[in-house]
Length: 161
Image (cartoon, rainbow, N blue to C red):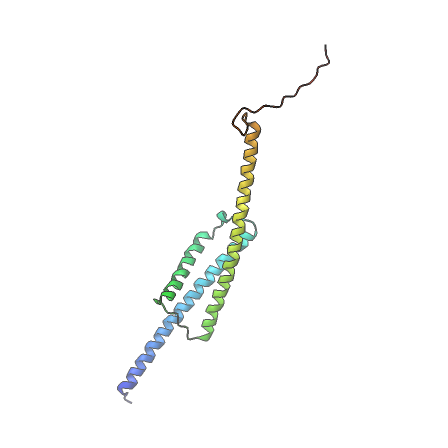
């Protein structure tokens, strides 16, 4: 059986389209894996923040930033039209959308927990600073004006004569 030129061109286009769709599906699966990893990392960080750990002591920060930069780059490439994430497979498209929504929810919670951790850190710092100020003022011979403060002197009466 011989093919006509039009049939051969059509077959070549279909194969090219299938190959590009396959690459796109692989890219989508890779993006889903990235989103899942980032979501799990953020969830772990959220759990630690919920325990009251200060944000500065979290182990996930560097890895979270690295994964977030990768995700942001992909989104920026798509927005600029440099990369296309054509998802022909409806199930794969739904999985991607679900993962994006899960990531967004985790990041929203993360933002709230980080703000609370920063506020708690600020309160702790202020409490320490207040204690230091009180300690300094208790032992300082100078008052707020910079002059020698009058010290309260106790005087007693002696009954022995």
